Image 1 (tube, helix red, strand yellow):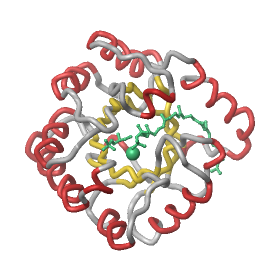
Image 2 (cartoon, protein in one colour; image 1 turned 180 degrees about the vertical axis):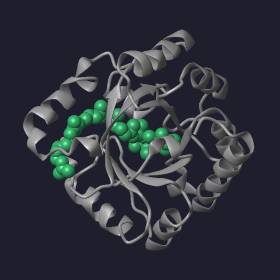
Image 3 (cartoon, helix red, strand yellow; image 1 turned 90 degrees about the vertical axis):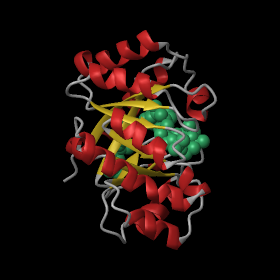
Length: 236
Ligand SMILES: CC(C)=CCC/C(C)=C/CC/C(C)=C/CC/C(C)=C/CC/C(C)=C/CC/C(C)=C/CC/C(C)=C/COP(=O)(O)OP(=O)(O)O
Ligand SMILES: O=P(O)(O)OC[C@@H](O)CO
Ligand SMILES: [Mg+2]
């Protein structure tokens, strides 16, 4: 059984991208806490199940981050359901989830579901544009984090800088404001130093695109995150 509050590092694999068997093996046996399958576009039942089967050959926790209800497949260790808190369109906060629950409630095992409160902070990211986000300032981000923890009691607050490296001072401020909710950071990690810096601030660091651009650097982020957590302690 997975426990996200104990995780430090996650690799996010995009089912719409190609990865060699050798690289996939290195990712799955890297010592990461989990492999998350997810992306914003081009996610289909076929490419999700294809990647899922390949990851299942290894002994690593594998979760599906749902971005399209048509691409939900059985037998993942968990299902992460994003709610985009800074979307200007309630569709991405409530409506798509509502529709999915209405249609599929008899197939859902609720203990496998975990809701992520997303705060998207890179205006260039596909997810920012797709979900009509507005760019929050520091006070907005802190308010979203507090709402996630105290009003919605969400297990996860996800600071999403997808494609660009974020503001570690802001990540630290959010970490200081949260007690129970797990703070996940993702975006633009391309060096061990960046991985360590974000590991010192957030509970969980997600590494995505660099997997496809520089697999060796991607693999090194596991040790960078794990050794920072060991040294600094931290909440997770
Ligand atoms: C087990 C089984 C078969 C169950 C069936 C029952 C079932 C269907 C359960 C699902 C229940 C449920 C509540 C589903 C919700 C469905 C849904 C459509 C949720 C919407 C999620 C959402 C807000 C999506 C918007 C996009 C988003 C936040 C995606 C997350 C991934 C992400 C941020 C990727 C980064 O992407 P990007 O910025 O584009 O970067 P790249 O350029 O690298 O891709
Ligand atoms: O792809 P990158 O920029 O590493 O971001 C990771 C993840 O937060 C994307 O959802
Ligand atoms: Mg990606």
